[in-house]
Length: 231
Image 1: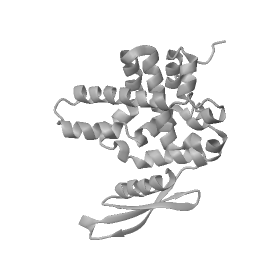
Image 2 (image 1 turned 60 degrees about the vertical axis):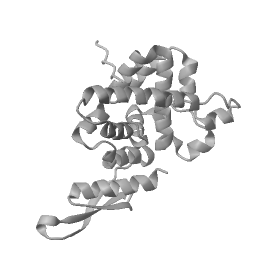
Image 3 (image 1 turned 120 degrees about the vertical axis):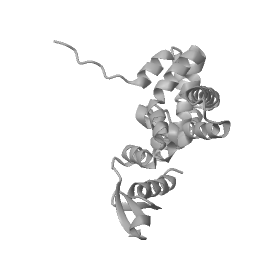
Image 4 (image 1 turned 45 degrees about the vertical axis):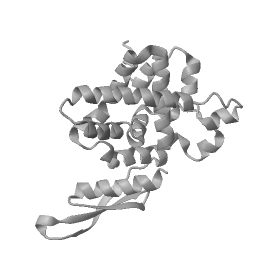
């Protein structure tokens, strides 16, 4: 009988590349966990610092090569969008990284496994560990693979502004529910309409926003909700 083919998981591949298990454990150890265990030096902050620099270099090189006609100012803005907390948190959700992070009891109670800033830091720490273990070129290969869905958004011009995707991933991870949107108002003449959308989560309104289209209004509502729910 044929065995079912194992589903490809990029996180598993990355972890396999970090042969030094202690280095991986440190990358996944939040300061709250390290403090509880009496090992304040065994947290992921230094690896996060390193990973942040490595990530910025890899993304800068990618943008420089991929978009030869874009001026420096716009490249800087694109890089900032690619490495922002929202983009990193999205990647963490896709990797299901929250299930691998080691947190202190207080942070667990506070929902740290789904906190975007904590998840973003963990992604950078993981990149730092991958760089130390395998060097820049091998690290670049996996970072670029990890970033494929974000690069796709970049080409479509949505990137960090796709707050609907971010809110959905966050709400499903934190509350196990999916947000839904309604258009609650529209004004102006037919050629210049303004729509107002409301996003509801667990039967409670959590954000409103306006836009020149229904989609734009929904994005604005999602952004307001995201900012409220992810301090």
